[in-house]
Image 1 (spheres, rainbow, N blue to C red):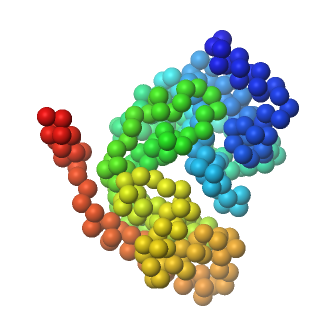
Image 2: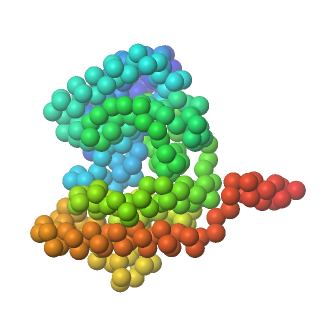
Image 3: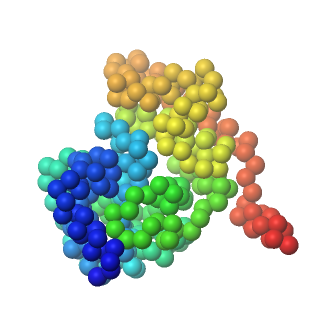
Length: 297
């Protein structure tokens, strides 16, 4: 056993340990302690590391709308016969009564696939936010998630995420943001069924703010930070729409007329974001590599 593991075990036996570690939220820490223990039991030698990311890691956790995002790094691709045990484990945790147990969302990613995104190696077991468990394709937005994990991820066990994930360049983030707008959000202009949910409308608005922030700055900001930036950057036209999203669920509308108006506003912001994204001149990976070669001559 490594010295670091011995220290961790000794620390974890302190009665106040899980009140303050690894996040500022005691109830989430209790849940993560159970999750980590159960994951290690199921995976055994396949386990490499586990990180928390998203709003829990960035300090912007909002109890009424945030999920508890995690990623488990595995030594290699998990054998198919192990997946039912993971699914049953997550079902037990979801039914445990632990606070936030039904808000877990995460993926099991081999360390080789985690190092750099490759769409041909992007099918990984995942716990979805609705509690279902399946092997899902991780789209281009996973580039953004990997950046967040690398820069902000909270270590539950294993090496620091910077050791396992290569640096992601600003234009890589811009290309991922642009592709996500085209692949996921553009079709929603034709089929906005998801936007009938006030929660999803708030999510959509804040995601548009973060996409614009990434395109402008080449980095990823927490959604509330990106939203405040967008209110200033985009001016009065979208200020109230963004404010309602930040205030959700307290800012959600309840009657049908207001819901229709809010849907129209959300679709308008999605359309505006996609149109504005076309104004950014983002080099292709080949152009970026050529520029890097010239700079090193």
